Image (cartoon, rainbow, N blue to C red; front, top):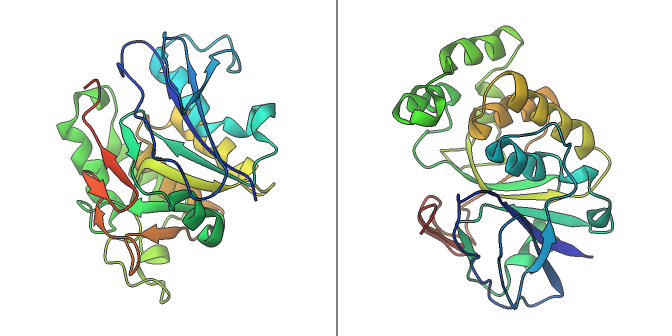
Length: 238
């Protein structure tokens, strides 16, 4: 099994790369960036794979997060793990755990939302990045399209009370053909519905009847917005 961790850094959103601890299995770390980044552990790749019509740095970075399936050099990996530039991998068996447990996708549950997507929509009012959006309109559209909170809330296999809304700074994907349509739909939502990945992803997963592996669990602990067994999360730009 081959596994790769990827990130994308554009503009001045992040000032440096977070150096990961050496993993217990062969693991590649690839950073796509237009900045002069240096690292002993990350392979630095130029931002040359995204469509040229994307002009905003934020959209460019999101393309690498949501459309990595279109990058030929990543097709040979069995698992691709997206990391925000603010994430530092701190556990040597993180990649090994993903390879052994990831089914379609694995993420940490959002500890502030109680598994209710409406709470994410309401929380967007506190972030100026979404001032030009109407999240209640977006979530109402999702409900009209059939989205039901109970699809995730009533899953008997998962006792995580926050299951249903996920933090997307760490997203592990099994690189199988089925994820292509999922990622394409997620990118569509980014372009035409909301810039908030945490709002759009539950809808896209519901649409394709995907039940992600959710963390924390009995093995993996922590507070996803701060620090978990796998990573430490820093403030952007620090």
